[in-house]
Amino acid sequence: MALRSYADVPNRIVRLFLEQAGRQYDQNRGLPLFRSMTAPLLARFGNSCAYCGHATALVAEHVVPINRTAVGLHAWGNIVPACEPCNKIKAGHPWEEHPRLDWPRKSAIAAYIAEYQYQPDITELRIVVEKLYELADTQTRALIDFGLVASRPHIAGLHTSVPPSP
Image 1 (tube, helix red, strand yellow):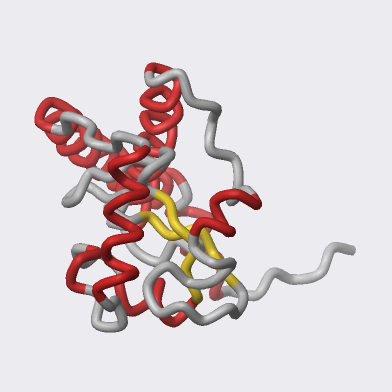
Image 2 (cartoon, rainbow, N blue to C red):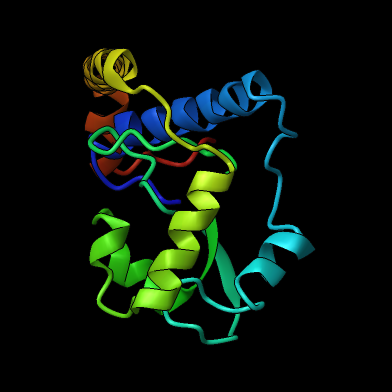
């Protein structure tokens, strides 16, 4: 994942935090850590996309997005197989609103969420995530500013030619 703007850094830190929080959430529920989509998980959705049913290359898709707005966790009950197009279409939107989702698939996803009892209390977690984002943003900007100030003499000399050594 390429970093292209200041906001990419705090967003990535929030994502990493929510991945780790998901591991703790699974551990607290007595579940194994979610490392990759297992054969039973894929079979549950017919070895196809949970949203559209196409059996193309599948990726792990977070039903509740792992971002600072939705505060989803990387945990069992929140990860389903999805094709790349469906993953891109859904992006950060609620899964229930996916345009390719029909009633049987919606029921299958809801049953999967219920089976794993994925319902973390994110009230306090949201406060932590917002503070983490704010701190990461402030620190990122300060580090970049420090780097620019510290390297100013070197950057200024980049446009001049240096005579060859004798």
